[in-house]
Length: 326
Length: 313
Image (cartoon, rainbow over all chains, first blue to last red; front, side):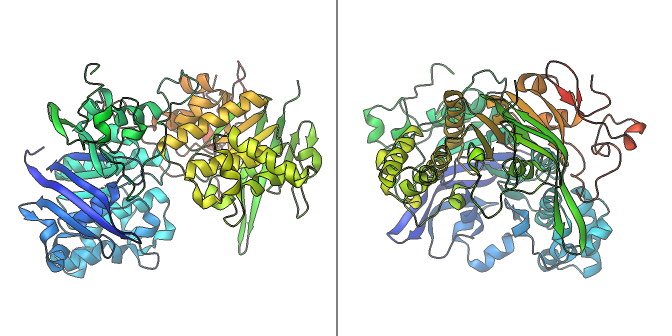
């Protein structure tokens, strides 16, 4: 793994246009992704994790606005002109989305879809692109790649389609892959294969991957560092093992407690009371305070900022009620 | 003791134009006792939802027999459910689709009572009680489904099911469409209701870890068949069927250890052309040469466990 920061996001804020005016979907988010690492962004639906990825790619819905910086290989993605961003997107930064049946075009052959942006970005000829497509499909373990090129997405299973979508993303040898819930639509057996594939690609190609998922089991399997988001902000960010075995934020603790226990045992699950805030209805102070069992008066007023509490471990919870148990 | 729900040798075929019929469920057996939660797990396309729909009578069967409380379950036509089958009810996956967006929640929940011959005012009053029982405010009666979150809607759908005073519930992926924290609370609610009302529940899910937590017994399906069934704890700690073992080791654990789950190579075969012999043999890591020819039936092992594998002891 090479050391070095590939992407540095500072104070990213995303406003989405709603009927009642602009509302913050992401609110002052900062994180970094090192080259060759898998960085996980975890959170429930509506926590702003997908909007973060969309902001980096310049794919936000119309009328959305951003502020802050996202420096990728020395250039600020948020300040780029659409034309410049088009050269980065699909080439240096690629994306894999949740549902391969919508991210692949149903009427185009696999060959067209794997080769089109290779030819666009790299300016190579049809025959060369085809050769590389065969290599890519065998990298992602599609049986009989030559024949697969002539086929259409409907001829493959969900897992195979997600492998093809990953091949499409890898075509221009990106430095960063954004994977938004890459295995959520898949069965566990198929999910295991995709997670292994992502891990292998990271090792073989020195590829950095941002995995966005609500599934902490998936996080635990592949991520090196994890950022837990709540209400568009960072709750906690740190190394995988620290965050999952000694969580310091009550929200992280709650998410872990809500999971079925690995050893069975207790008969009931322990849910977090209440539900996550909706867009534009994020509470004052700490966004999590209405659901937090440890909330004190200052939590209702002061907005917590992530501060360093351990080795590469940042926490946005000043009372730090779980600090002693860590 | 007779079982609350018993399915023997059930087969369901989907007929398609220009193609041979697809056997989504093929000789599946299932029993459910009163007060028991049976988890039904398997990959997508294994036929678990189809089997669930067949046992409540929503799906015509091609073969086999289904008995509820000793009486045969006939497939529902356009007519209303016969009175002796009202105790058999279903909870669906998507509460956005299973509730009518244009009717008041109280009216929808009260339907079950109206069909049972209760007066309108009484039905509404009891609907209010049920909504409180599933953890919603009493004024929910006078509101519409869009005013509630996904988890709350699923609670409404559950209340609606309870109005028929069921003794057996088939819940098809009832928490899959919900957020993590809502999943836990709706799963807890279902468990509580089963215990409190002494019902039986078939809990269909692709999420093995939830099934492990709440089910008394677990049935594992592969390609239209039940390949293993037994007490959840034993099935999990020492799976008898290699497919069960593969499913369990594919579940990632949120323990921070960074262990990659084990991959089960290959895809679920096309159910219209199942492989000969044991249906799992092309993907099975421990298959014997004979597995390509012999199709093992679900055989009783011990301690209430059964498996369909020649190697199971």
